[in-house]
Length: 335
Image (spheres, helix red, strand yellow):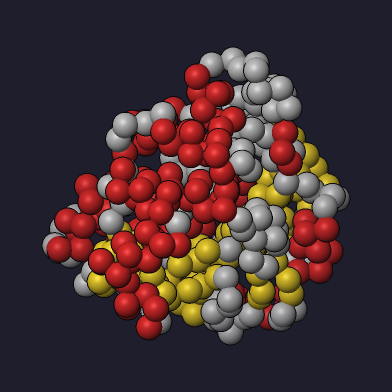
């Protein structure tokens, strides 16, 4: 059985992106540039800001999109929340007919490229809040561009052996694009040199918006360009995460920071899980994720990532860093 309903909160702005001469506001104009697949337009967007703070202020004031909830009925002890551009697309179909078949699935549909204010964090939060209505034990958030490795029965059986009142976050077996060990590192001269020769425009934006800190993988390449910040080792959910409903209820389902725009929201959540002292459990369940299956990996996306990096750097410097340096502080009460 499939149910669907719109989320009333927010605004779907009826802009025809084929007509770049008509805009309703400066916010619409800037968003049109930011969401473009033309790198020149995205660079024009960034040229409109003088500082990191101005950029972040625009991110916070950016209007909300209007997603649609489409539910597939199933077992409600475990509820899967999946943002998708197209409920009837191949990725969403694979999720409901194969990967998570039998579980209750909440799809948050954006309406594809007509949703000019799509925000992955906002849509996940909407879906997670809806999931709480069913009083589940576990809430899974997942990209739609996943593929099956282990059958869903293994996921169900593994979670049945975990106490959701004692465990906050569950990690499956590490995949290529989820459950990744990372750390936060500060860029060094080698990185500056690399950016100068590989993409000086992005390097310029990093300097303009005071971006010094980056997530990094544990490999020799990262060690060569990033100085590790002590106490920042964490597991990043990326495309797939499992949280106990008890943990989610602490923030009324608002677990992702909606200021992020389709980049770094998963990194930010994962890092906060570390700093908050969330209890962790691992299960023997494998699932695969395609790289950039739904959102294409290209230069335009790389440029849009700058905004997410700028905001994460702002939070790291103004909030996270002091708790790393003083782990006995009351961060757990504020997260």
